[in-house]
View 1 (cartoon, helix red, strand yellow):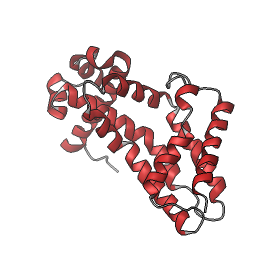
View 2 (spheres, rainbow, N blue to C red):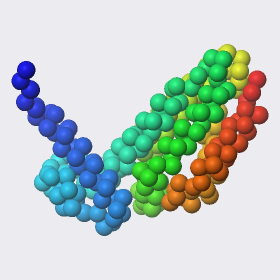
View 3 (cartoon, rainbow, N blue to C red):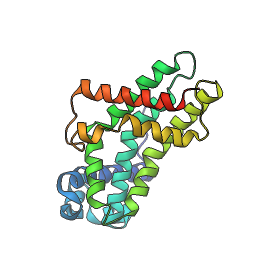
View 4 (cartoon, rainbow, N blue to C red):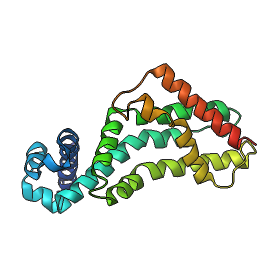
Amino acid sequence: MATAAPTQTTRGLGKRQAILDAAAELFADEGYARASIDAIASRAGVSKPTVYSHFGNKEQLFRESLAESARQINEQSYAAAIALDVGTGWEESLHEVAEQLVECQRSTCASSLQRQLYAEINRDPEVFAIVRSRGAEPMIEALAGRLAMLANAGHLELDDPQLAAKQFFALIGAEMPELTRLGTDRGDDRVVRASVQAGVYAFLRAYRA
């Protein structure tokens, strides 16, 4: 069977993704100020006008690059959240989900994203909201939905599932900045695991029915 020729739309989407991939690498390696549109276009294999036609300017490209990185990083977190068992194995599953969520945040890509946010948020305050809407918010909403189901089943006692989801995430990651040296190191697996489990126990002490 003959393969259909790529349409103008699919070619355009391919170029857009190539630009985002190149931008993510260069912004991570060189920072916002030093990474140039010329260099990004060259790495992506497109012309400079093509970059501008897709993203308008360097600032918007930076925002979209970080937002796409956040979406990709949090795909695994989202999958872990929606896989939380709300049946008889819910407590063991909660511990497993906690470890998976923190593992996602220990990745090299996640650490790079965090460093770029810290470096540029004063210059562009809007970048935080854009990145959060693409990355963390869908995961928090998914986890909140599962926690609400646990509350409906009588396992947890909570009034605000979304707040509980945020607090769960905060508790399991409470020591991560210290243990990973602000994301520059993965930290000791055994120590990280113990910290994550302590966070789950703290959550259960607060919310167990």
